Picture 1: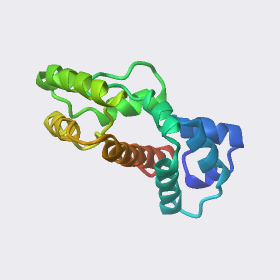
Picture 2: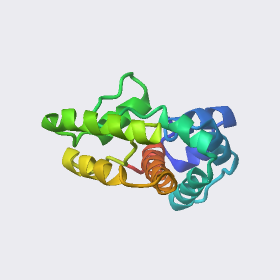
Picture 3: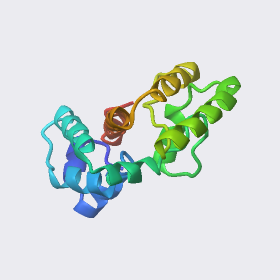
Length: 166
């Protein structure tokens, strides 16, 4: 894992793409963000990543969503993305897991993919409230929200990747 932006900027392309997949599991995202290096500063990298996520084809977004566990479920595996997911969802209280599971089922039936929310800093109750609110969205509005959430997650993970995200 690169520990600075400078180290990230000089990684071989294939290695940079592998690192980026832990931030957003879309090969299209990883390829484009890697190809636009070097980045002058963290803000430039984060702005570019957010823009790239928001412009992904919907199929690429769906591919990225497959790497995200349901809210309230612990991510399996020892990879960095799974560890980050467990950390990001640390605010989920045990007592809410059944309600989140029920909400996840309703969401997936309605939209056909996992409910995604940038969970960092949110309590389980806040995640559940957002899930219930988003169930009222139409397909177009929800796709916009999903892209925003995916971009927020990618940006947080990119900051961690280059050692500036704690």
